Amino acid sequence: MFTIRNVLILAASFALTANEIKAMPSNPEMSAELEQSARKDREISALKRTQEINEALINELRSQIQFQMSIINKLNGNSSINISCFDPTTIQMQLEESRKKFHRQSCQLKDDQLNSSLLIGCIITSEYITHYVVIRYLSEIGTIYVPCDYQLGAPGWMVIQRRIDGAQNFTENWDTYRKGFGYADNSDYFLGMERIHRLTSSRCYELHLHLEFENGSIAYAHYDDFRVSDEVSGYAITVGAFTGNTTDVLRGYDNVKFSTFDRNNENINCPRSGQSGWWFKSCSESNLNGMWNHFNWDSNVLRKSKMLIRPLEIK
Image (cartoon, rainbow, N blue to C red):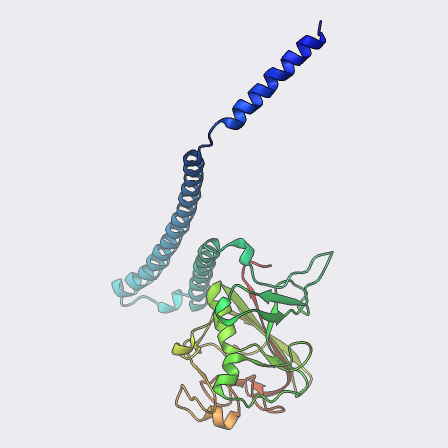
């Protein structure tokens, strides 16, 4: 039976216990050790993941080498072998599939090494649509805003170039192309080579070209890899495997440098004759930044064009 005296004694004992606990010295060394242990566990887990992906990449390379060596050995071992037995289309498809697999695994490794919160791409959900993606972590060039595009019916696409009304002059010098220009909201626009380089060097991107020709036809060109080197390297372009309903004009353009009329990196006269900045391998094959009513793809004049990119992991 609890009396008032018992209750007071019990309360006093609780108070004493609380005071004793409060008076107990803290142990920052133990907290630091626990945090350090947790950090080591995370680092070990990340290293194991990296090792697994690296091993997968090595195995894929070995597979490609063995496949190509088997063809070489068969050809060398029998001079009378009918080369037509090796269907070049099949061989090309197998090599291309291996290349794609290797590229996907390389991108996965690259993305795993980045913080997932740094995912850069436009998103669309049932609740909202992002009209711009804000890029802040490229601190060297400050915060930039890249317009989103949902014409393809898929999330993630960012507009890096747009020609729709001729409102913007694309006959600009190197410095202007480096920084970017135009009207990002709803008119002619170019994001800027330095920003494109920073984006495409941060993770793996794909490229989609939307092309509307002067005769009214519409086409697209899609590349599963798109990268631009730094300014020192001339903002050279790299593209991956092609799909589309038009000519694969950029095939063979790997490592072609960007040029403008005041900085000709390929020693050809295209920047002056085309009055623009572009990756020129020839003057007439393609120039999406050419003069209005003269910009073209596969030597055919365009009336509208868009260049879109998105991270490969956004589907």
